[in-house]
Length: 182
Image: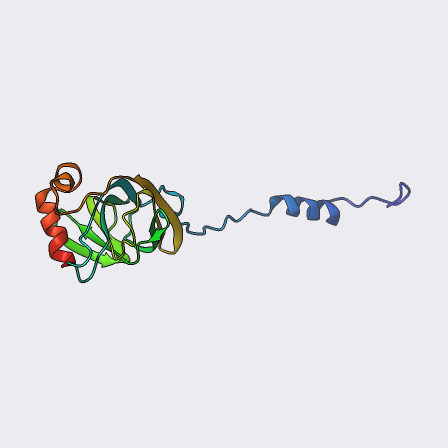
């Protein structure tokens, strides 16, 4: 528009368009993010464990490791152990035993109820190719989200010995483990 043209009273289309561009509300999309995605690991290893006797067990011939498992969310979660290694040895399938109730929660996959801490758990492995010490690594998923727990495992005594009872599992806990894996 030139200076010579007559200006019309009111608001121009250009002014209305600019105002609309700035006044359009921003819509935030609420995409649910699982609480466990940002939380610390669900499985915590102590590194303490005992070796199971090789040929006297039908199902698990490996190790029993002390652990705790925690779900701080308001929903139950499914945990799947995808790999467990000690040093360079793959420990195979893993049974998860709640030592307080002497219950097998599952083999590799188990459910943790909402807002639950299982502070007295044994992870019992299928294999023990060698009597190896070193890095104990558990890789797992929580509802498909990968995570890892690790500890150093040294001096893993036989489960039927006094050293295991004094340092790792009580007599009651050892009886529980043996009753489930036998």
